[in-house]
Length: 364
Image (cartoon, rainbow, N blue to C red; front, side, top):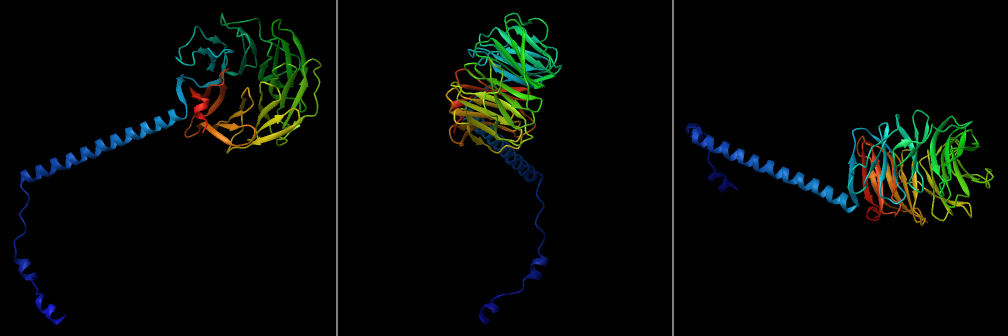
């Protein structure tokens, strides 16, 4: 160590006496600036490439889940339905209903000038009639060919406001659920047939069984589903109870056989009922919003639920979620969903857009 220490010398005085390094010349400064700009430009281009790649990856991911395109509007969409053969899509936006081609998205003919925002609608099995429920509390029947109303709005003693409507599979009966119960009309003659009184005074949803022999109604605040004999207009067995007592039943859907019935409720839960055994399977997902729409595939093997936050796809029987086409990531909400008659295409309302998805591809 002493030897090493002897080799070190103090040269600070010599360094202090040395002249400072020369300042860079103007040419050197220019060269430095050019090099710096080149580096920044390269980083900017790299960032753009990475951003484009990121967007492309997102688009590829969305396409992989079955995304097929979308329709835009200046006002939010509120309800959507396919016609019976799936050729046209009926979409309620603003105070009217448009008819769009689900593939080309082109508009067909004039709109249905409802005059008030539409909250629910249904199309007759022959495709000749459209029925709308609007915020002015009117139930209107429309001629699809002419886009004109058929007569005056329907009225029923005891029904104060409608929330949900359905048409029987043979096209003879129209049902409207709302404050006071569910009103029935002969659709062709527009005659009032009768009122199915709600347990708590009101119904929030209604659906016909495929053979028309039963009507299912969901209570507004009782958390129950009631099955009715269509001919006698009397309850068919005990009510189906599987929700919180104060939760409204917002949506109902049968499978093609009429053996299974799906419901969606304000307590964030959906059920699929076996109407033979009166047993049910519960689907909870990760909902933080009431379920407002349910779709049960014709074969009863797929359940689709929609809330403002998400559209989820489940296997039936079982409770496994097998796909989703929408999870809220911004301000847009899902207001309604519809499945094409062939079961291939799902239409999803996201505020002012309707997106189309392949159901098969959307499954995991």
